[in-house]
Amino acid sequence: MLFSLRELVQWLGFATFELFLHLGALLAFSVLVALHLDLQAMSWWLVFVPLFAADGLSTYFTAIVSIRLYQEGERRQAVLRLLWVLTVLSLKLVCEVLLCQKLAEQNQARDLWFGLIVSPLFILLQLLMIRACRVN
Amino acid sequence: MLVLKLDEKVHWNWFLIFLPVWIFDAILLLMLVVKMAGRCKPGYDPRNGSQDLRKKAWYLVAMLLKLAFCLTLCARLEQLTEIKLTIVCIPLWALLIGAMAELGYNIFPDRRD
Image (cartoon, rainbow over all chains, first blue to last red; front, side):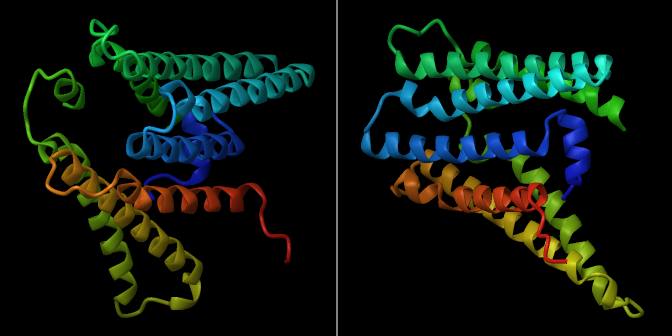
């Protein structure tokens, strides 16, 4: 719509397959959230499993791609890709874990306010804005 | 705005919290409609854009699905309606399945030709 797929891949630094993986995880997560809120069927930690699984698989995929790039002599590209993807995934994971903790233990986690939970996402958005300037 | 609302620092209406989303969606919808209407101009050659029109129609459907999801979610959060969250999420799921199908088509392109 606003971006072509090629521009999106270049901007986010993820491969198309990884985007597919994260979209699939988001779909499964939204189904589980709806089921949880309508039926109270499972714990919040179980609801977040698709997102954690997608982060893990994405890290594994990135490690393999970076190792192959390194072996083929593209050392700078391999290190930069690994650093960027690990930064994005770790910020996303911190936000997910904090949100899950807040939702699962609402009475015990009163000090954990939403501004704190979303702060990794704010950092991520800043990084993406800087990267958008660099890419185009 | 969302964080302020969730932390109960402000007590605004949910439709107001979603204001940036409405503005962004309105701009995108306007852009899409203008681009699609550009095909009706005299002198436009329709042979060079049948694939393009299909893509734009999908984008329009995707935007409408997103809008439907946000509107029903706001209505539910404001307790204007008592529908289940499973029903609220149906447009979002349709949108995600469509996006995954498009991405999948790009990952595994059709090799018939």
